[in-house]
Image (cartoon, rainbow, N blue to C red; front, side, top):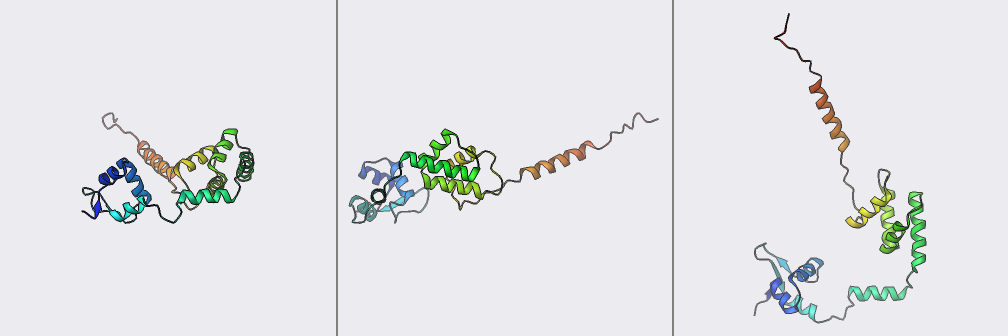
Length: 178
């Protein structure tokens, strides 16, 4: 019996789709799996598969989250909305819309504070806070994410100077000379 399995073989044994197994590979459920080449694909050791099938004595990530949630009482929805409102007002000096409060309270107070910290640390003033927040949520920005500044204005100025130089050349018709 082989020591290594392919994604298809693991999917068949677990009765899951190949995409699910690939997602597990990316998330690190098979720590000893490796990919030699694109043609050969992933090689998953049987020990990793056995470790997945036999529940270990260590609590899983979900079990830890459930335990943490039970130890500290969850904030009530109204409390979360109030905290989100205060944090948003502290950073932007404006009141958020009801949809923005709902979005921010849905993602949780911790993530909301991270996004507002990103907004506050932005080198340029954020002109559209709602768009900024939605983009930060969708792109998964963190306070350690380094923004890449695009120098659009410099390129436009250089292009305008180039076109001005072409247009300033006087037209002189040698054929109509007196």
